[in-house]
Length: 285
Image 1 (cartoon, rainbow, N blue to C red):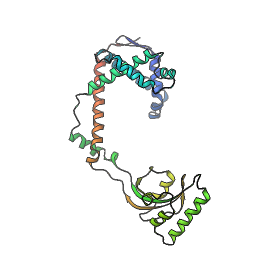
Image 2 (cartoon, rainbow, N blue to C red; image 1 turned 135 degrees about the horizontal axis):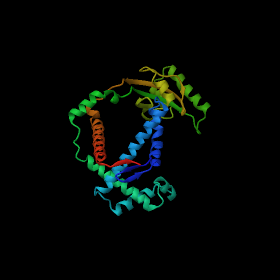
Image 3 (tube, rainbow, N blue to C red; image 1 turned 60 degrees about the vertical axis):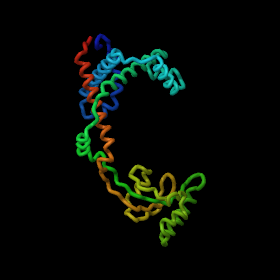
Image 4 (spheres, rainbow, N blue to C red; image 1 turned 90 degrees about the vertical axis):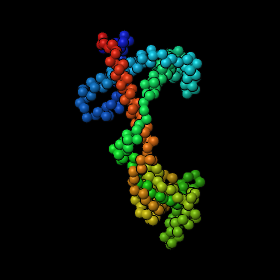
């Protein structure tokens, strides 16, 4: 079933393409719905998306915020630098030639400028709004547990095979057991002696999983046994632990301000689309 939006025809095939674009994320998000209901809602959302896109495009092309041929040619030249195959460029833009690509570029430029105009007079988020968001979403800013850890490492690579690396790390381990300070063992044995093997404070997932599995289960001051990662053999020592913490507002103020500004812009654009829709002539054929 086709749709007319201010006299411009939208074929059902375009709505189907939008549905296929949305489907992977949509079906994952609404997996609990009955398949028939889920498909009906997906098609309805796709239909609304396409209608709204046409309304924005129509407004952008008719509002007088034009573009120059120089701007379009310059943008096309930059885009072409990203493609070694011109046919791949045309495929990406669903175009037959440069003129088709230029029309798409012009449309996008006009849309971008129109939406910037819609949002240009929005106020900055107030201190009260920032404070309120911070209080409601403190858990989102909580930092993970951190540990300060150092290690002795013997790499397994083309310069040192498994047996040689294991023999060296075993010597380090034996000397530690007889009382050699960890820091002295780093200087004597490690393949990475920068900062005394000190990796500073780390959080989970900064290092490889095999490393995390050992060091995050050590107490402060504890030295690990020998363990293997994909890089080689290690012995690690934990010097300090910091529990998860919520940073003060001053450290996340700018981040919250950007979140609130984005929400304000989304609200302004949605209101703009609603206004376009209220004035539009939309009919099903």
